[in-house]
Length: 297
Image (cartoon, rainbow, N blue to C red; front, side, top):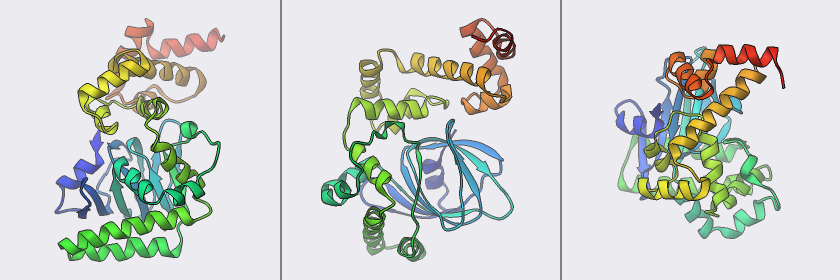
């Protein structure tokens, strides 16, 4: 899978971009170069994205959202499935940023987040893509930030960081941003629930343990210790079991083709999926589906 952040940073001649802050956060003018109709991607950075033109689908195993012009999205770090539409070029302005930046913002403006948060809401069941209210001020922040890409200077990076804070403040002052504020507040509690949610959101992608550690903002050794302490098994074993369990549910409860299920669960091809599935269940996916239909439980 493509790491979107790393890919963009490596293509500075293609993407207009400017880093700000001290954690590699970045502002991008994204004219999407991907040609596949459906592609898997991921990032260890969160995204605030303003759609300038075109249509794209962003999805996970349990969620799908098709963008609209002038829409504002928050996309949590981790894996995502991109659905491409080619009626017109797709362009979006994107801030990509670490969880650490969110925590710093909350420590600086605690009352703003607390007043906007929903009380008694469990964020653990919320989806990774959130549509936010896009008002004229939000649009102006994104559009005016383009000037810093055209004339990058040290002052530009400082000004861009201020713009980013203005964007957060404006979003949180909006009465429709309660769930986003709740997520920000929830994120600051580095609990087991936070870790488990992050793993469950990303267990259906073909991540290496090193990539998952990067998403979790941990060293590889710390991630492995944390994973075993919280979930009781190694990352590789848990991820494999989760994918097979989900495959069984999709085979029994949906009409998705075997190739679609293989893609959605992060396998490189149908053959790799079938082998992994048969090694575990002693049946290939097609026979398992037929058996579940003829002998429902």
